[in-house]
Length: 67
Length: 150
Figure 1 (spheres, each protein chain N blue to C red):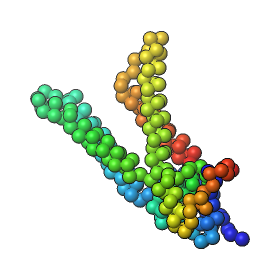
Figure 2 (cartoon, rainbow over the protein chains, first blue to last red; figure 1 turned 180 degrees about the vertical axis):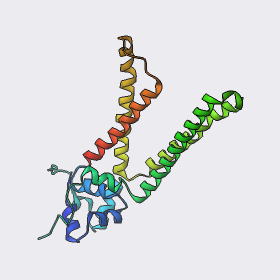
Figure 3 (cartoon, rainbow over the protein chains, first blue to last red; figure 1 turned 30 degrees about the vertical axis):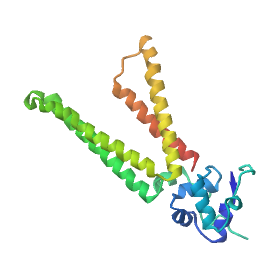
């Protein structure tokens, strides 16, 4: 699934490690989600969306194919 | 323009991933407990095995207790692994699950498939050899899953 995580993170000048720490996940998990290799479970997707002050649909796009 | 690279490579190498350690600090702490119990199991197994081989008559019925002693640490290792898995970071849990699936699958295929090879003339293997294949498959499965999600 495609997502806007990299852009949202970069807009805030956060590193993957910073974001991972805030979400209480590993940097590997953050990296895998960002690159579209791994889709997070619903609780983590909600946590991500809330952290950016958005809805899940604003962060993740289930219709767009992963590049 | 937003710098999406943010001074980090987009893709972590397998080596980076292994060095960074999969999972969170809590996962690494739980993993250390699992490793500690496993080492204790291995150490007591080696000691018990040596004593039972060389001094079985001297210890008498205590041999039964000694033979069962490593299992306490084995159960400890199993419970530590369960705790690690239940509390693991969700990607790490998936990696472990894939590792277990590949390890279990490899072990079963080898154990069943080798029976036919034995009938065809291959040397008879001990249970330990099948366990080695199973554990090797588990490690290989974890590495391939880590590589896939790097």
